[in-house]
Image (cartoon, rainbow, N blue to C red; front, side, top):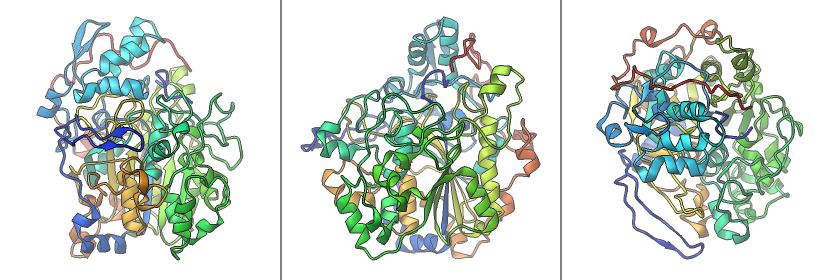
Length: 576
């Protein structure tokens, strides 16, 4: 499926000339965040404690929501009621309706999906002013819809939910730890950010190394990855691959460093990472287990309904896809549930969980509209008719959190719940800038996303302001599992700061989520019961849980109770 409409600060840095590829570092956006805290700054003692406690990392990686879209009224966070919001796009002009629009609360979990293409996202952010979401979306949607539908999608960019619609997510945030200055690592759609979570880049080092592979648009195969082209290798969703596919990605990933001495078995498609593989294989360190579980993946060259090839990050790398030593770790999503129940996971490792555009759990949206019933059965939380009802999406998250909490692994786990990209929605916090990319825009960051850490050792009800992005997830895994950074590897290091950002001091390693007293054992860990939600509730849509039952009073966002004239949750014209 394509990511399109139908699926539907003062952070300064000097310009540093990068002679190898003619790129430079620039800083124009302003992010109000605490400085990133890294392992070195946290202290060896804290790192040792985290390593002694956390053995299993689970990453539940959903789709397409900004922080403001899901947590814009979360109390205690940098939310839409803040002065920063008033100064960055809180009031935006609607050219079609000839009116001014401010953020408004909605409860319908079945909506159209705004555009998250890179050029549109950059235009919406408007250099950090964050004030052109409505008009740029209307401009984009006018090429596909009539004025009324184009306006409705444009207005949707300013809508937000709260605990009455996505209560499970708010429960986790209230009970555990929420980060409110975490950004998508590459402005744009799903694929580059799915790749970022295992590579801390989207191909910048390959672009610097191989000029022939470099592109300046997401419509073209090449690097950096700007768009959602399918990977070069199968499997593909039913109906076949897209006409144009992405080139083989040839740079280091977390899977490579986790491979240890097993990396010697990788023989196919090793261009670009030969020295990396050799270095890790010669380290003498045993492999550390990992797995990528995805809805619709079945191990064949054709996925089941709902399989989204452009969300499967390992599939983009020939050396991961075409060497059994790596590819054996890509599995159907329900396999993890069986392994948790049976206690069949290895003694430590990292395990990614991805939904799809069709769920296999039997969940259905409550709206009786036949279009909704037929076309919003996904569980990856991607908005848009032809994908996910958001209560189905959070039921997916809760199902896996429940399974982990009830398993033998809860006592040594850290569950990261986050999203791959902003989905085209408004967020008021301007992201920081990193290296300039070949299309003239910064290589990162994109808009702010939610990230929660659910763990027995997490801080209770904390909002952490440390600055980070998608690479922080990888940085956390490296810190906890004790593997070297991708930026230190021989095939990547010559091209820095292009390439992996996992060694950057500007990006948190997420250790700020953990309670030192719980790690030391002087305060009891959070019990598994605090993370679980009764299955009868999870499997009931709509859920009976809400703000009142959770005891949460959302922050008062001015004007949030008034939807603007012309707003509709879904376009009148359905474009599959």
